[in-house]
Image (tube, rainbow, N blue to C red; front, side):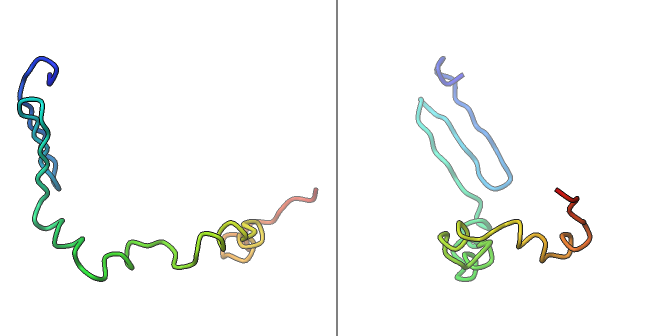
Length: 78
């Protein structure tokens, strides 16, 4: 539709995206920008505080067998 010079407005709950005269304008919802600017946002969204190098060196099989699910499932004899 943009190719044929139509104006298009996409309204999401967190942002409005407007295509006018083949240009793009995005307007974010006020609640979203306030939430992201919060100092604690990064620490709450982060899955892990350990460096990536630690993740690559971790043996996932031994870590799984230490977990609650790993103790319930017995590995068959090889």
